[in-house]
View (spheres, each protein chain N blue to C red):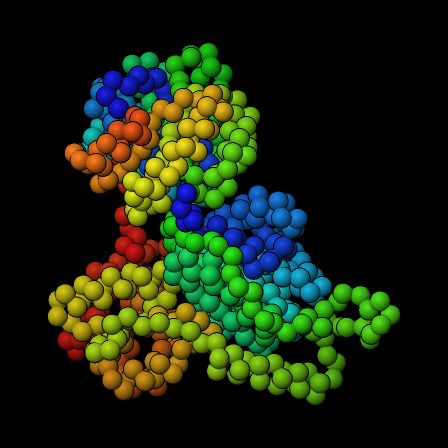
Length: 232
Length: 352
């Protein structure tokens, strides 16, 4: 990912459960190594269970500012948006990552910021795709998701993130199996493939595996932030 | 591409129902089970099925009664407070001998409680769940794959015995993601639904689906018949699994998500030199009384680990005839227990 351009505001959107929150956390931490002020804004109004707030300690330690509903991870099941969201526009020196909720319902939260986003023209909205999730693995499924999210958010996607994974069991082969589908989708939707995320544990430093990883294009190493309180 | 799919427990339940041929789903959103309804809303129209978000929980269970009476495989799902609202319908389903599948993804209670995982509806599920003499067949999966597999099985069991089969999950199982296999299964051989209200076409006597009997002797006879069926279920359909119980001195009893946490505790105990094992009931009604009674002759003590204030512990004491001490490791209100906490109870039980 070295040398990759990034917009001042990066929005992760996509299907429910495609891995947006985990990516957003990783991306914010990655940005923090390059920029002074990094904001991670949690606009997930759909899922009260898995939130950026799960990684609050880690984010705080690294100096990423988390903007999250004060009700996140509490018993208040209210789709409240944090008022501090405006900071992504009001602080031009800060780079921001926005974590949207799943599907069109989740993207709806972005609608109210559509105008300043479009006018500022400093954003990218990335379609997070995990073809192993149900209702995402076909051309029609993906086209439907893109159409619904763009209509709800009133913002156009600018790129794709290949987040193909089967959870902690994912192998390099599982990711490779999805590459042709992702590349076809990227061409059809006219959305450049921004990156392929791979768990750090799978990244090799040499040998045949490194070759395979190189062939995947831009690779973004990620960690898996799990709900640590569940020791299953 | 691999045949595996990364699914949430709630989605797996919905997919399991679709694989089982359920084309009638009636529900109402409530955290942490809403993904079942959301998934059904997307999938049902594509398979010519019915997804209906009812105006209330009471309406949705009554729609299940209607669809089931017409001979269709029908399902509803909710979370704790919502399932309590369905209670009246659960009793009517039993009174009418209608097969149905009802899902409860439990959350903290009582009252509106909270949205975090809990197992506090054990009594509600296993001790009737509403008024009158009846049982539901209660299945407790502990993985995303099992959420699919046991939902599928629940439809077969419900049809086989004309009973309500309940999937008793919790917020952890509903929300967690695991890779699973969703390939079609071999259909079971089941009795024909010759009792269903499908229209006589003038060729037979009308079928009647009813739960009102003014003559007490008739009602008693019917209840006796029903309990004979329950006896058969207890005999044939009780499910459990064990883990490292062969030489165990302390046996932990836990179901659902708690059984996975308990498994980790057992490994920790073994590492520390305590011979611990796990008995995991898969059916909560019928309860695996026999294997527990057999273990009672061999072990020193039992530890029941549940995300409730001591509900299943009563069934363990009854099943083991209190021959051995039964200790409780409990959390409630949405707080999830840890392997370390269960380990402490195992150690104490071993030291006593």
